[in-house]
Length: 425
Image 1 (cartoon, one colour):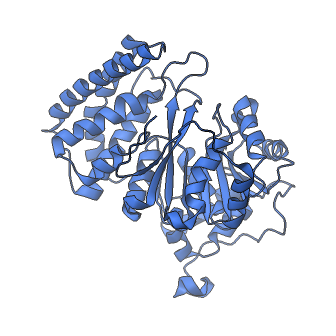
Image 2: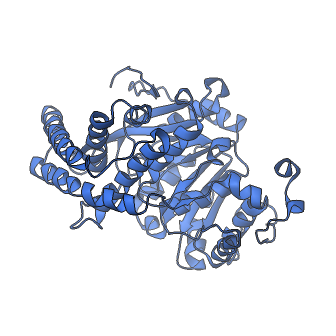
Image 3: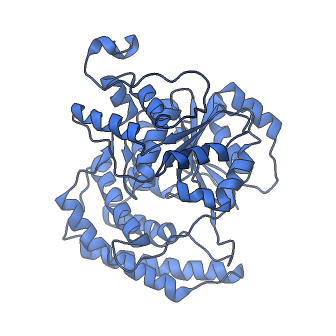
């Protein structure tokens, strides 16, 4: 806990409990706000999603909840809809991999765009944004596996955007990742990889603005964030484990740092990912893809390229900084009487260091990442595509959660006569 500020405005948690549900609902009702939850069907068998649902049931001023669901059958989708019955706001369960959605997205290939996957959180977020941005001015995103979800989470993350006088366009969460069972520190990808990596790159390239920007976020891999829809509509969405860092790169491209905030959500816990036995598994795979995303951001924003000649320096620096961080986190844990597996943390740094050389080689072979196009670009091709996607996500089953008839599906096309006047202009 502190009160320091930096490049990115920081909203601290002073542990005073200054929450006001009545006032927050009034603020929600004054600026249409939609929440988006990307979700796998397996989450419905875990208690975290029930906690999230029960907590959100108090948000009577919410415009809509969009659940971007990957499911195997219409019966699964109907079960998800029943799970959210009785909420005080409309809930749209959008079937991301349903037959109608796949048919529609495959037809976008006629425009030379590949939006059919790969399946994962990035693809679900991209679809969910297309649906959510139709009827909202603010969109907030939460994962479906948050085991500590409380009323402070949506209130603290959304309020900086609800009052336009703050001038904010993007808000990202940060928190203390602790295991509910053991109280041990979690978040190894952030603590032991991204943090040391950024510090090492700064020593090699100097204090570049983009590196300073990334280092200003206390939890750059946090999957909880919110933005205005005009910003969300213009973001390309990464489709791999570099989603969170890739989105920060996109936000950096479109928004001045003065319009970005980070918000302390306090104690936080969700599913933990194992380190993995090899580079293609678990946290190792995640770290490898994050590494490529960070270097690609340096190329895009600073014109800086990590060469193979610089790689040994990066490997040495990363190991040194990583080992220093292990010592620091060990001290932090000891004074707070938290369990700490120093040997396991050292092994994680060792494994992460082994990802740098193959990661750079892979980036040099394929420097252009697969990103899902922004919705503003897709609207320029077909202004009805968002509505078509929303309709497709409700197809292939009998129930409809939102009021009113759904529009018929239309294939994308380049006919300017079908564009809305403002797009055609």
